[in-house]
Length: 206
Image (tube, rainbow, N blue to C red):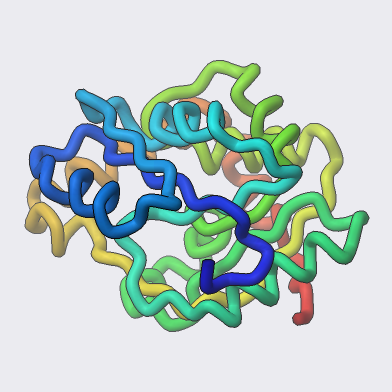
């Protein structure tokens, strides 16, 4: 593995229409645990399936559409949380993604970040609650807040393809609104606003 501290990589093909990608991963990277789901049931279901194969104390979550991933940033975050027992989770927030600058004042780059490191046992406890589709980040945040966990952020240079680039403005807007509705539906307005202003405000220096 290129990143020190990562002993196993798990990739979930969440019901994509291209079977060649899954086959290529299995062929080129035999050390990777590759899982192919028949249908797309959302990010939460994909992570739940991957979690069955995790045997380490910590788990690092990252979305499959990220680009410009810098190994040193991931390595710094892993070392930071492993060497500091008082830190329960580190969220990597995008610092160079142009698509999030317009909403940075709402801290979407932090509270909705899919790039984060936390204890495996904490993630399993998150799944003791009911949530669906793309509510996973909101569910993790809510669990961390209610359990009074110490959550920090560190900068990340990753970029990702936004919904408008993937599906066009109309479909992208529909999907964004659906996701936002799901976030609020799970957390409630009070919790959602609290996360926006107060959750994960402390930066963990490398």
